[in-house]
Each structure stands twice: as C-alpha cells, then as structure tokens.
Image 1 (tube, rainbow, N blue to C red):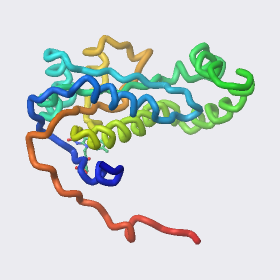
Image 2 (cartoon, helix red, strand yellow):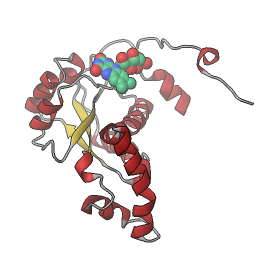
Image 3 (tube, helix red, strand yellow):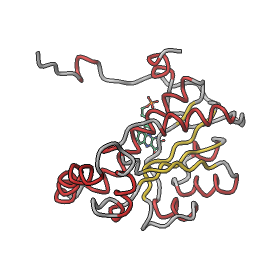
Image 4 (cartoon, rainbow, N blue to C red):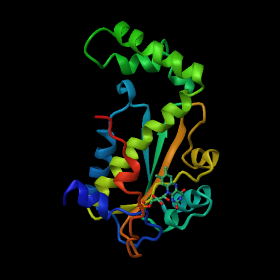
Length: 203
Ligand SMILES: Cc1cc2nc3c(=O)[nH]c(=O)nc-3n(C[C@H](O)[C@H](O)[C@H](O)COP(=O)(O)O)c2cc1C
C-alpha cells in the first residue's frame, strides 16, 4: 500500500470488531510514534498502551463514554511532559540534550531563547502537548497501511486519564487518546476542501 492509499483508506472509526491486533503490528505502530520528530529532539512524550479490559472501560468513561474507546481492542494514550520538566537548566532537559553530538551547553543555549519565547507567549505546555499530535498522525496512517483503523480523540477528562494510568499531573500531561482496531463499520467517505481552496502558492 502506498502512503497515499493509506491516507485515503484511514477514517475515524467509531466501532471496532473483537479481532485483536497482532503484537508485531502493535510494535510497528509504536515504532512509527517513536521515530516521529520532536522540537529540539526532546522526545517529551510517552505512549501508554491500554489493553486491560477494566482499564479500557475506565478510559471509555474518561473519554466521555465515546464508544470507539470501549469497542477497540486497545488504545494508545500519548502523554507529554509538563512545564516543570522543560526548563533549559533543569535535569530533564540536560539529560535529553546530553545525547546529542556537540556540547551540552551549546544545546542548552540554543534551546533557551525558544523556551523563553514559549513562556512569554504562554505556550509552553501547549507546545509540549502538541508534539504528540505528530506521533499520533504517523501512528494512525501507519496503522491504516496495516489495515488497522483508529480515531484521534481529544475529548477526554485529563485528570481521569492520568488517574487510571496512575500518573501524576506534576509529571505528565495528556496529549491524545487513540483507539486502534479492525473496523466493524463501513469506511466513511472523505469530506475535504479542495486543494484549490486550501492552498496558496507564492511563486
Ligand atoms: C485532533 C483531533 C481530535 C479529534 N477528537 C475526536 C473526538 O474526541 N471524538 C471523535 O469521535 N472524533 C474525534 N476526531 C475525529 C475527527 O472528527 C475526524 O478525524 C474528522 O471528522 C475527519 O474524518 P476522517 O478522520 O474520517 O477523515 C478528532 C480528530 C482530530 C484530528
């Protein structure tokens, strides 16, 4: 399947069959997430795979009883680091920066002005949370290439999601919840504006 075919075949699936996702396919989907780039290469995320039946039901309630979450054999919750982790002089950023070639102080001084800008703009946590959206897009399209459908879910109660995963708001924020599985409903046709309407070219 080409990338375009996977994009065309993916749809926001709300009802899944009971068919389980093979371990190899799940690992591929997670790899698509892992290989996704992040700003400054910080990888401020974590992916929790919720397969346990009781936890799936809790997650369904935390997502305001959206049936996709209940019927899917698993959901991936994409988490991100809150503001307290993202300070350029903090231990966490230094740990991430130390992995790269070049000096750690160069990394930190490169990152610092952008961090200050995000803080001034009040965008630090939304910046962190939005990193997860790229991983989600790659996981969803990659899954579609394997015949697996999904649905991006932004409608969730963050405290409830963190609580069911036994995570602390001081350590993690929730980016998105994505149920994955095999569809038990027909694909919905794409409703999209035309390229002509969406694209402005400056030549
Ligand atoms: C960021 C984001 C958040 C979304 N949140 C929800 C959600 O909470 N519940 C839901 O049923 N669908 C949700 N969707 C699915 C969209 O409604 C759906 O992708 C869109 O209508 C386009 O349809 P398609 O994915 O079938 O092409 C979300 C999609 C995106 C991209």
